[in-house]
Length: 363
Image (cartoon, rainbow, N blue to C red; front, side, top):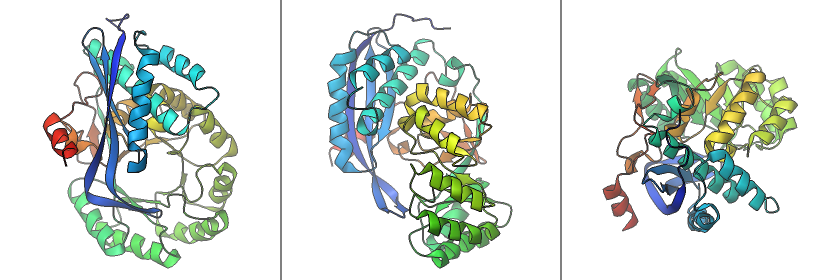
């Protein structure tokens, strides 16, 4: 399938951009008014580029991640553009430091760019290189607003644009505030629209158990990350107490952590983040774990790569649509009638709008 087996890495260009959001993202932990992104261009000896981006969450981490990626160039320059080979090399290099946090993110960004380059070298969409075909995958709208009135208005916009499922963040206040937001959104969109809620790890296990027992009467599709993400036993206790499905996974740093979560029975579904899991390579391994455990897989962020990956995930469920990079892309991922269309362009479909990027970076 690969027409360029000897494609070699020539260099890495990493750029940090703190992109202002048209509508800030409100969470139980605070408000994100910008999207700090690291843009990666991996150049090969045949002039083919692989592209990816990483999301830092906080501008404080933006330049350190750019510098880390820049430093990694010398380690892999001249190597064959093999995702697995590069992964093995970087795992050995970082064995004592560890491969989570910024280190793990940098490795994932390189992995994503390598897969993108290989797909472009074959003139194939990434999903096709991975054994699938371009198609549409169901998507839900992840709302940015938490307050009852604002969330209801935003939910109406999402449904009007074709979404049949939406997610709203809660947990900034008490249970009464949660219910106010949920009921306002339900009143705005009607009974046929699926509603998910996300606590963003804001509750203690005891508080979460008390709240989910009440939320069981609200007809929710799932309750996401009610307590600390790495407390798998705590999530298992919550899942046992709840009738509503518990969702977890966006903060799993690699398939090995996912295996621990599954072993504990921490959730009813699983949510995969391509950056934290270890890139495309890590996602494929995680997807196999989910299949053997009969867990439905939804994506977290990075819709451009996630659509391709859900296209080859046996237990594919939902794509989360919360657009961060769209304003700096030549072509955004297409969402129509609540479905994301996997692009038929070579690679992941990521191409930068350099004019917009220059404008943002000059501010």
